[in-house]
Each structure stands twice: as C-alpha cells, then as structure tokens.
Image 1 (cartoon, rainbow, N blue to C red):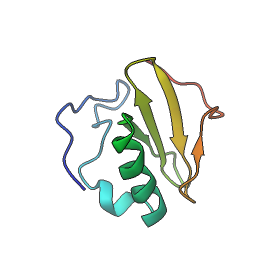
Image 2 (cartoon, one colour):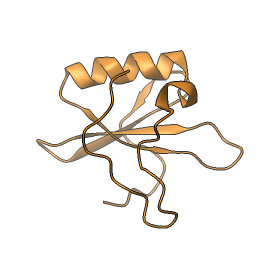
Image 3 (cartoon, helix red, strand yellow):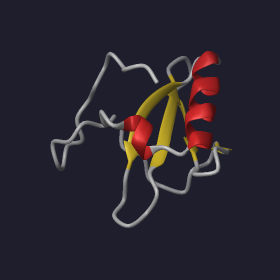
Image 4 (spheres, helix red, strand yellow):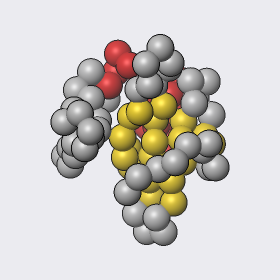
Length: 86
C-alpha cells in the first residue's frame, strides 16, 4: 500500500493519524476496500485503534466533506456510530 503524503497527528497522544504499519493493522478486506474507495476520490483520513478492538478505518471525500468507515469485513459504513473530530 502506498505511503500518504499528508500525515497528521492525533491531538491527545501525538501519534500519527495514519500509522506507518498500516498494512499490518488492516485486514485484507479493509485494504481492498480502501484501495477501491481511493479510486473513487476517497482518501484515508485516519485509523482509529481503540484498545482491545479492531482498527477502524475512516475515509473522507474532500469535495463534499463526507466521511465513512471501513469495518473489519471491508464493508463501507456511511453513517459510522462514532463522533468524528475534524
């Protein structure tokens, strides 16, 4: 998977919003869906990694400000059940 040019940092912990070991964190299904979404104008915004839970991939579309998440099974969720900080 390619490296992203715009790393931002999580405010509370100073950790990158997009971890360097992205390929090892995401399931194969999440990686496939992310690659497909990027071909439709979505970009990886950040990866949320709650303790003892699977990572949640958050993608964004800059043209209209839309956000979505990619669950462990690689399914897009356009109304994620979490509060997103911008």
